[in-house]
Image (cartoon, rainbow, N blue to C red; front, side, top):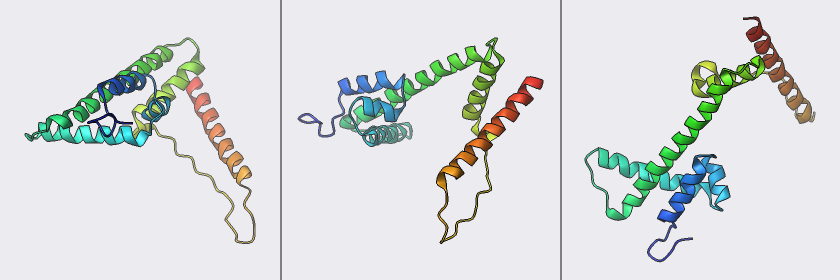
Length: 162
């Protein structure tokens, strides 16, 4: 992938292409769209972040390492821009005249922005596994989905009564 003098392939052109994707999609999807391995993008970001932290701590970074720091900063800014754009849409949806749409937007926002406070934990009592009996995985999946649907319906009903 790399060019002469650039064994790992991180170029200014590729950085621009990655940044353009990250405003719209996840890191994994950006890598797939660019025909890359997401682990490569993560490795470059981790390397850049480490260099950035070293500089902030008073250390030095070799000029050849600066491109990783630049990559980390640019991709971080692109991800924040994408996040902000999505939150603007969620914010507009929260003010929707459709209560179901507003509820779903609020649920999405709260469970993603405040995961520790609003996450949903679903538990289900499933039959114990016997060595002799084959567990019906499809039945377990249906039961888990039924429980999630039941929980969602209760929350929607509660929200509509408030």
